[in-house]
Each structure stands twice: as structure tokens, then as C-alpha cells.
Length: 226
Image (tube, rainbow, N blue to C red; front, side, top):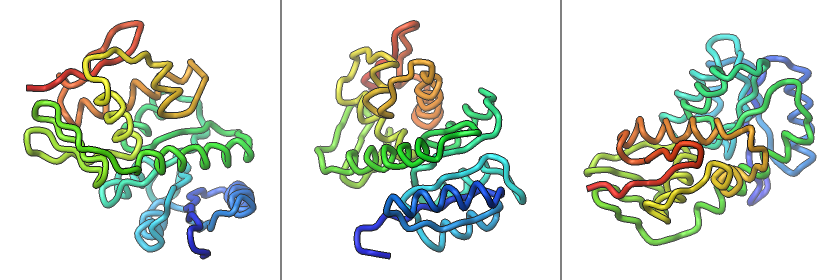
């Protein structure tokens, strides 16, 4: 692995698809590791410490949701989830357990590579040093990427952290879903606003239902906690 080269773990049980993804990502300059079932994916993630995981939802052993849960419990890592079904429940559950983005099969390998680049850029952008944000009992440390509320730490995925920090940068201001989708995910497809909704639900679950206010038909605002 060359210095500065990013490592991608591709978890896909269909070998033809896995090799096609790997070939394209290697051509894009990434180092690529492969796993073909749930248990080996978790073991490989611990062994190689990837910068991003391309993760199929349906896997032998146990599924991509369980892979995501186990991997994220040890270390926040960006996850691009692949699903064979355009089923909203599957997608929302995947986002809720820590996936940052998703694609539905069949998909363009070229678009997948573009999504990988975009996701890594988002994570890198949010790793730039900044001042700790303190709003009531909520504390966000962008340098160490730590969040706590009332002294209790919260484990957030990379995208959850970025979304929270984005809302905290303009407390009480209502931010439209479309703007969040554009500024956090880099998407312009307004039909994908359910992605934003799913991450908001995850933040409420981890930090309290009172933290983020919904403005129906518009977007979300972070309330300053006491």
C-alpha cells in the first residue's frame, strides 16, 4: 500500500460483482480488500482497518446490517450499503445502524466509484480542526470527533457526526432537508430526503428526542439543550 493510499473493503457474496467493483476502485487508485460473507467481513474490517466499506445487504453467515452494527461498535467507518431491493424499510434500517449512503442494484460501477470518492471527501472535510461546540449540556469536539450530552458520551457514525455539527453551527435555525442533503451528502436528488430523516432519527435515539426539532414540510433545527 502506497503512502496516503486509501483502503476500501468490498463485502459482496456475488463474486462477479465483487471483482467488478474491486477492479474499478483499484483503477481509481484505491487499495481494495474483499470479503464474501458476514463473519469474514467483520474479521477483515478489524484486520485491515479500512477507510471505507462497500457493504452488500444480503450476505451468507449474517447480513450487512449485523456487519454494520459490529464494525461501527468498534470504530466509526464510512459505509456505502448495497441492496438488491428498493425497499424503504431495508434502506432506513441500514442507515439507522450506521450506513452513510446506499445504492440499489443494479447500479453503475462508475457511479459507485463517484459515491466512494464523495463519501471520503465528506469525512476528510469534517476532520479539519475546529473549536469545541458547547450548547447547554451538549458538547461536540471536532478535533477528537467526540460527542457527549450531560457528560454521557454518544457513539456517532461519521455522517451522524457531520450532520449534528452542521446543525449545531446554526442552533435554532431551521435548515431545509434539501440543503442538508446537498451540503452533507453532496446530493441534488430531493427524492432522497428520507436519508436525512433516517439520520435525524438516529441522532434523536442516541442524544435525546428533544434535541432536534422537526419543522414539518421544511426541515430541522437543533434546539439548545439546558
